[in-house]
Length: 121
Image (cartoon, rainbow, N blue to C red; front, side):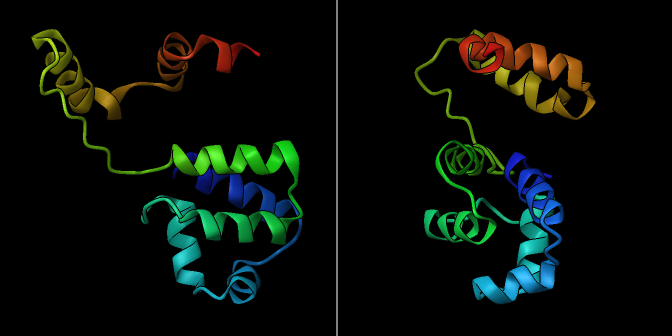
């Protein structure tokens, strides 16, 4: 599941909207929305994100948060370390090999080190 998919599902369920009804209102298939929620599809385009915000009644900060999560929800990421130090290349390769084994507490700690202002607020 991606951050976008998790949040969209939470918002949809909190409003009592079924996946089928949401898909019909957005003009997409329920299978596509389910794949988005579960991280089996890439991040949605900005137009669909805005449609989802409108359907869920999100404005201002909530809409911006959902847009931010969509941008961070590409389930398959490629990292180009060309031109970086050998240490950077080693780090991303070790991370790729171990990411499935890291617990949430470790991931939160790593995210806080990457963006302390975003997480501590």
